[in-house]
Image (cartoon, rainbow, N blue to C red; front, side, top):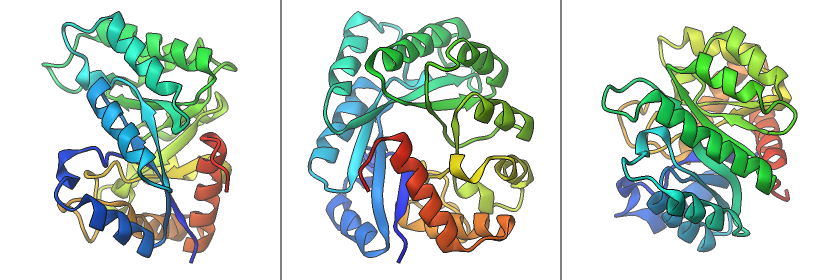
Length: 259
């Protein structure tokens, strides 16, 4: 069986607290070979770090998500993220980015400052970034263009246009797709997916969210990426095994995981 590399998960989410150990075994039994467990705050990054150290098939990333920016964010928070980033199991700075969807989120200028500070950290530490962009593509592109040639990473749970995907790939980024590609209204995501070179494509759950069909609405986990890989294979005229093999190789390359 080809192994799955889930390039974006949140097993530090409380949705997994009750059956975490049993679920980890279930994932192994169902072809999951490696997991990127993503931080979104100092606390969530710390939990992801702890979980990764008790697993032989999990790494983590440390970062502050745009929707987790607190009013009292300070140098100490960034210092904590940088300290965790030095851990041997930390393979990226993330999840970071811009999200203008919610009215009660931090102001765009604050989000940009936090984003840029963490991008600078990634350059300094020579780590890839895991980037969240929601309803903020233009500002994100303007910022990322300034780092072209100095930064590598992935735009996770991609929701932009095919044209935006082309621009980001040209800048050197990988593009990650979730169970959204299996939804009936997935035309935009599928159009974007089809312009991404096969060696820049990643699959992810963003679990516990984004469960693919036929599990939509249920708690998502990495074993459900079989459905995502099959949908992508059908759209690209490839086999599921082709997709699983290539996306595993891509994620391992990006995050410097020995295969």
